[in-house]
Length: 548
Image (cartoon, rainbow, N blue to C red; front, side, top):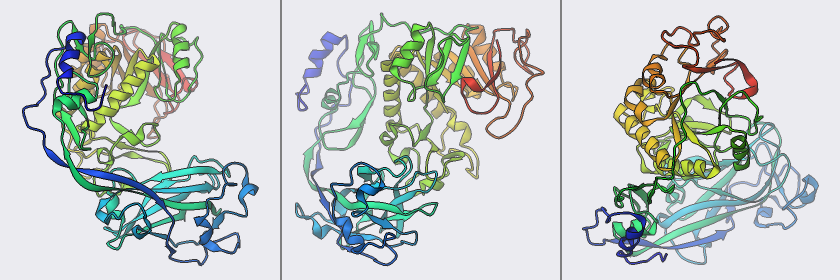
């Protein structure tokens, strides 16, 4: 369908797809907005702040070799590029200066710069031995900003054509001085080895303002291929837009009922998988291949780490597959991490590495980290919709969205170990119900993960429950009332040694007895399926014992 298709064409499609007329806010006239004439160019550095203590290899020429992009340094071992690379010494503190005056394609002002990307070839030790940090200088705050580090780039293997992008939530213009200077540097992290670079260049992107007439909301919905429900995206002028409703569906079609979010379709052929009381389960978020003969009717696995083929193998063995993802936190190691704008997990102007939004103290030096999300932002729901679509495409029967109780971690004055987004209970209810509705529109079942205080308000929207440590904290009772008594499965996980290094002796109150809930009354055998793990690592071969 053409990008510029007339606004009337959605109505023709609606007659076929079972949808009624669009209900978008379309009364306003198109607005004339600032558009941009985009351009991109790669430039070499114009000067170096210092040549002292730069080259640990003792090679002549110093940093000037970084203007040469050696063809030999694409693959292979250490010896391949010895004559071409520059080896940054441990005491290196200088930086390279690039300048807008080097551009030949245009003459953008500093304020018109929209993106900066470092282009390099890199070789060095693995992160466990030593790691290196690429940085750009933010002139507005007189501070260096981390762009990327060497973790995961291999141990002494050339990483060719490495592109390091300034996060989209950073204003690129803040990294350009009033005279058009841009500064970049590589600094040593831990360890003693020196980093090796073959070249270091800068790709500059800019937008020179022109004018643009904003498309109508109806045209916006059509261009995104949607015809029902709330939709967020970027309009034809490059502006973020959320349309509250792209239309409604005519019964029996429902929004997303055909398996595609925000598109009307028939849901008659869709039967959401059921998880009745007494269903047995296995929970493993660390292994990407489980034996198919485990004593469990349900396998709960990681959405990203488990292949489509493996999920199908489990299903061929008669298992129902539930796919885990975090819906309440930003995990910077996930393959779709770049889809989250920075302001969804880190307050503007805040040092994200020291953010109050970090989940507990869970950060690895130079590596993985997790932040609480502000799930009120439309961009978060866009990513979560894509994740649930991925679950459907992979063949998952249901999803387990984790960390959907951020509001309860948001009321501490100190903000230590808290979300601090000022999320309310109402915000959380709205988000969690939206997750359930979206999952069901894709014919996926969905588990309510924790959020114990809101169980009475949410149980009717969810198909089963997954809980961690309700026995330890004597808060399982609500699951009996709102899930077990409604013939919905309750899956519980406990730990001998939990993530806080607290030890609990479960041998005296779990096992195969008639009461499987330690410290809780009213539970009969099978009402709640408990797995007790020996540590906080969630993997089937770390299992201590089960309470069926």
